[in-house]
Image (cartoon, rainbow, N blue to C red; front, side):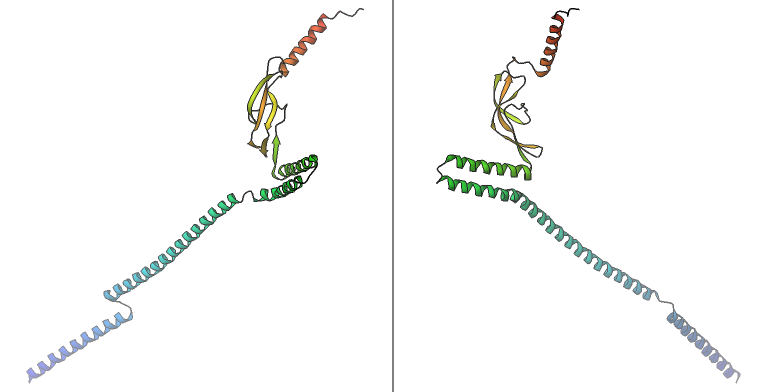
Length: 230
């Protein structure tokens, strides 16, 4: 009888231990479900976060690539437009000048037509002179184009191109004849005047020497003059 009771006691102890282990496992599972994650779940979460970052970076890279391509296309269009505008500016730079010259050309056409039936050459000459004055006035006032070079002007190698010279009684080189007028656009020479130059032949002293000689002659005349009587 005592053996039976002992076996029952042992079985009861085993059952109580099993129940305690079951309760502990259940409690651990509940704790894990409440907040704690397994290493596998944590790894999955990290992979998901990294994948999200990759997706975001891929999207940002695509957007930046699209912006770069658009900027490159805009710059290429701008470059082409600038080249075309530069070419147009070069091709049509003289449009305004040519428009202003058309009136003079029309007047020349009328003069040529009138010359075919004109009996007085002076009438034709007067018409040509009028056209010349009108054109010169337009070029000077509107485009700052001025002519220079007159006989008697001092020779300046920066302004004049000497195509010949002669020794003459002059104190300094001067223009003897002007074969082709020079022209300036504002202050810049765009065509040198072609001239014949008179070079000093030594018979006329330069202006500074003439003044000194005149002063010396006057002084000598005053010293040689008789003194006034008292």
